[in-house]
Image (cartoon, rainbow, N blue to C red; front, side):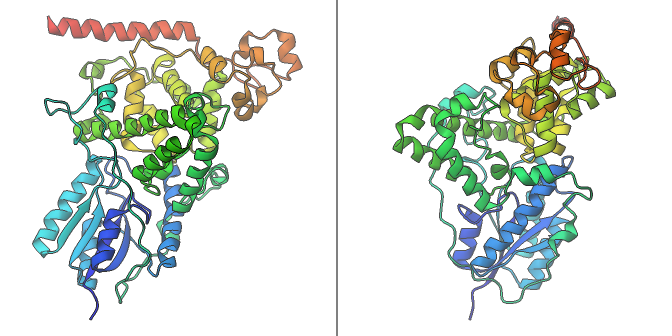
Length: 482
């Protein structure tokens, strides 16, 4: 007589290694691995176009990996709880195993599922797998969530080691029907994804391949490389972490092992571990303050006088602002679904401070175009830049796109790659072509306003306008206090 049946519900944990829900289920049950594409389960933040592309390929790789060890992946579409109820009926499952998610809409689904399983007298087995530590397990002495990263980092414990993947899976004998992956229609209907396809290899094997490359070529120089978009010295692990193709524990301990075995990797490796903790900080904040995906953490910013200009916003979207480092970043994003973190800060500052357009517009665009679009990280990053979130950059800190370019892309190679119309311009002018003498522009084959746009705003004037806007909400805040 075989084992009893259980369902393993895959979500943002599309891997076999260090998957505690899968491991626990396999140890005790015949297993039915399931992925449910529920368009309503993400609440106000359904998958963006780039994320849907990644999800399609990641599910294909997960299905292949499961088949290699004697199982398969049942793919379904519809309302999560209703589908799981139906699968329980079809398989006589005695338990559902899954790894927790912490976004507001995902937590709501888990509560609904738990209530349903109680009624059905089916065990609900939930595990922590997608963070190093469950949210709110790292708290202040008063038991409150941290709002500043440095003390959060000081309190950060050593993460547990990852667990191995199952060598084989005993799958339920009678499989329910599975949808063809293509029927989910996750891929674009027009051919805009060639650049993303060339840049990435989704899936657990792709994650391990990318990790090996980072450990070999990037981690030792990460402290330097995280600020240099012209060099390939960052990990590019963010989409793999977001979709759970690698666990943060696996990544943490791989980097720690590199630090222990290679003294040259210590500075960069420790800097990288701190960035993994920053990811945890972001998830802790959204867990503790779930409204921040839509509202500023600092309430005074609800009165901030944001501007609304569709033409300026579109120029930012398409990388046609006339500021080369900004345009390079936005074009890299559009082409590959990703952008170097230093440039993310520059383009974000430009939107909210030079253009005075709300951080919400930036968060929405990143959500649709990033392959690593993550609600916690996206929210924290944009609120940090706008000055309205936790541990935020002061609003008066306005990045100068020319000096940022000159400092972090000193030879102009990043700009030349993504803004090829400027490729022949001498380095002296590459980050400020509107200041180049006319003979330099002629020699480079550039007519400003035709081959490349003139700046859509004057940075110095825009900076003053931003500071005046910030001063206005400070005045209102002081008046309300009085």
